[in-house]
Amino acid sequence: MTTITIKNGKKLPRTDFESLEELLDWAVDYFQGEVPLSPETIQKTKDAKKELASPDSTFRPAS
Image 1 (cartoon, one colour):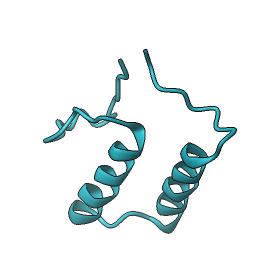
Image 2 (cartoon, helix red, strand yellow):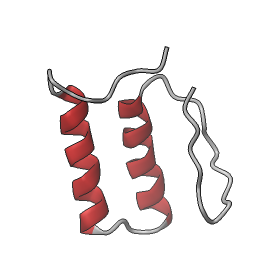
Image 3 (cartoon, one colour):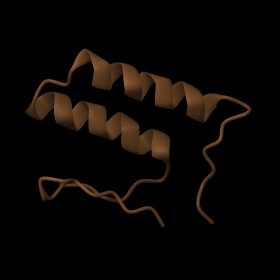
Image 4 (tube, one colour):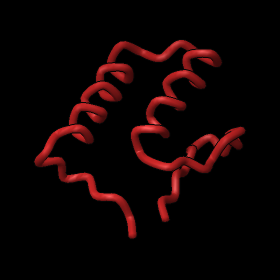
């Protein structure tokens, strides 16, 4: 199980995801609709998605 903490205490409309990649896709769409994301945040998301897809990724699903 993964716990995600939003520091400002905002409740998200969705908290159940099948994978980290699904969470990243949803978060980019959701937060771009609310407040524009910085180019740095968008780049970090792209980098994380590349890492997830990498054969030597250090990310492992929780069991």
